[in-house]
Length: 68
Image 1 (tube, rainbow, N blue to C red):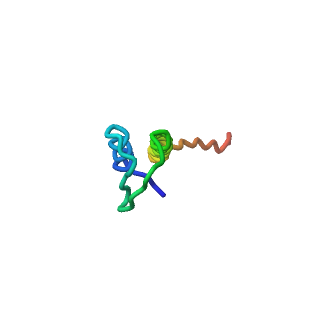
Image 2: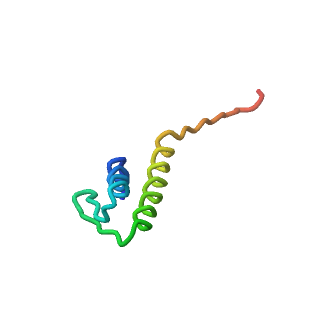
Image 3: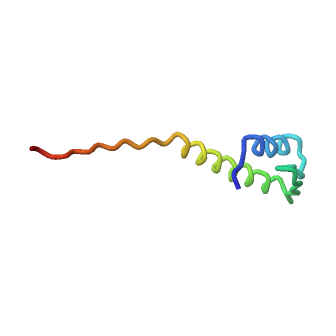
């Protein structure tokens, strides 16, 4: 599942308000504790960072045919 910034924002909003129920992608998720919310925040943050790195990765190749 690809996460979005909106998913992370929903988690942050829940943490700030003390809510344990978050709606992501039209689904409601109920967490058991603030620690679970913080774990979800870290997980989604890492996934978003990886998605961003993949989009900005560049490959440079050098080809040498040798001496004639």
